Length: 351
Image 1: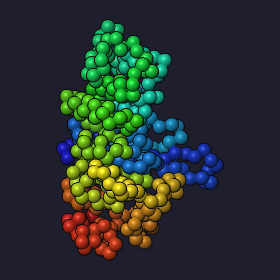
Image 2 (image 1 turned 90 degrees about the vertical axis):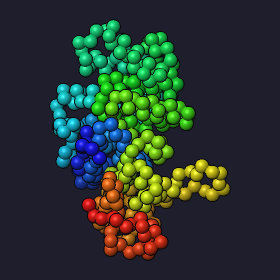
Image 3 (image 1 turned 90 degrees about the horizontal axis):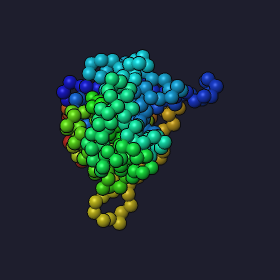
């Protein structure tokens, strides 16, 4: 990977429960996440609900409630620290340098304000010297850029007058208005039909190419990630289970959780077989334990998996996995990397 634009080292985010101290522990939503995003790169973040994806993204912009406590060893954008900023500097960061498309376009827009005015707020906050006529022109240009029909007329329309896909385009126009260096897209195609999903993804890809924007794409949909991302981060239990180039993830997954996610994908061909599911439930993040959080659900778990968290193992450039089964001393019996599957574990080394 080229020099990182966004670099996060050992991010930890927890939430106070509001219960008497000592009786109910804090919820440890993110427990030591480190990753980097290069300039112009698209990185996907996948995992079940509650795995820490959105909390990680919101932590970058300090958009979490007062009950959240955020800790990090280092968080930089273009080699400049973006952690512990003043309110003024945070306001400068949000929208102008890092922008976010929030998860639900149905509720992220104010229903009482025309969409043109909502996008215009970006220029009011960050480019105060701009004239009213220039702000309107820039908003119409952005609506044109995201392919909103009759943008000048739609400037005065309200959110309820738009379809779900159109509202998502408005959210993207708002996020891209100031040409940020990083765009965080949190489930940008949720609740959209596949045709509109494709349009939104094509739009994001085009804007990225034209503006050189880096994208952090959070999604449950591995097919969306496969089509848009060059690298994938798999999260579970507030940790990164696996990080890999997108081609390697689909052809050579290393973590049993990743294997489970891929196994749950529906096949394209018609089949009478039932979909494969991952048994069990996500961990209780108020008491995540000392071992691998996936161990209670893992069909290959060993005793040490339940009591001690492994380190990362590398399987090549940009490919790492948090799994004891990749240790050279791990027994091959009943393992996804057993004798019959030996090449998958060859070349793996501790990081």
